Image 1 (cartoon, each protein chain N blue to C red):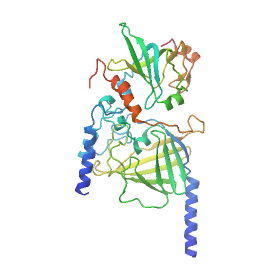
Image 2 (tube, one colour):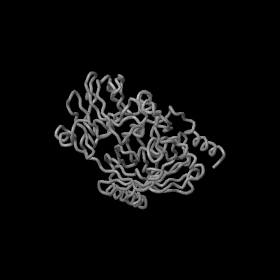
Image 3 (cartoon, each protein chain N blue to C red):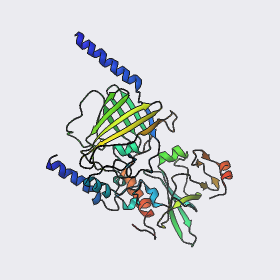
Image 4 (cartoon, one colour):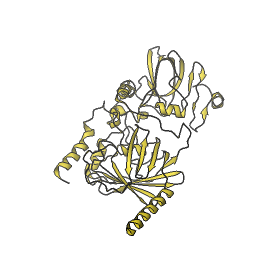
Length: 249
Length: 149
């Protein structure tokens, strides 16, 4: 009984310590600043592609970044109103609201109006997901000091890792390290996928700023991509813009 | 990794290559337009589409060669337009006379785009919008900036 009480007190102390150091609740917005990177918005250096990885990268034809081409001739999965997926959302500059609860951290994404859960209740990362893969993965986190270290698995490899067509698969595993520094929230990824990458690679630090509580910047709004709108937009704007008399694919 | 998992991964890698040209993205549409050039179109609003993924304004215009066409202007999503410019779904109405500075289509199509730094007159009055420095473009800032589009 004494042992149980001691363990409980220690656990409570760790929990209170972590909570005191790392309150994540709030609306956060990532600034811009990766336009000069060679391949991926996540990495200032070239990625360690395997042959399959290079093929996957080459097959993706984005509308942004160093390999950009007219979206009418590309193959971005968003073009049919598919979900952006977790990491493309995290690197895009749209507000994210974090809600920190005792057993989880919930991230609410304005872009596409999606959400994800990071479980912090001590559970293990599952070996297999019966219902997966998921566009937003399955995530388990633990506090290491004042850093929330998250393991994400079960990703749906049909999405892209960023706007520039960086590939991943449903076997990709990602470690996220979230660290709050005042009114800034910092994120670093380490991506592991032996099929696509010859070794794990780590992103640069992405920084999110805490938004104020005013109704313009401190509140999420709805930005859903509905197929009914997407079809209309593609027909009347996107494809039309690419089909003038000087069109060259 | 077993054979089935490898096969699944291989199929996933091939999937993007199976998409056709019509199955692509709205995001990144900026590359479809001449981002280094501006042109001004003037016409009458036939429709203002306040929708995701990007809004659109349609104008009946008369081109320099006399051709009358319905010109489309790609605009940001409603959320971004309301946040950055303070625009609403009532900002443009059918029948309004509009002068709009846009980046023209690179293919010569009757489509332009303005996602940032939009300079717009509606029925002769300057429409407030966000300047590149984050400030609001008003009649006074525009007077300092220069002439109409």
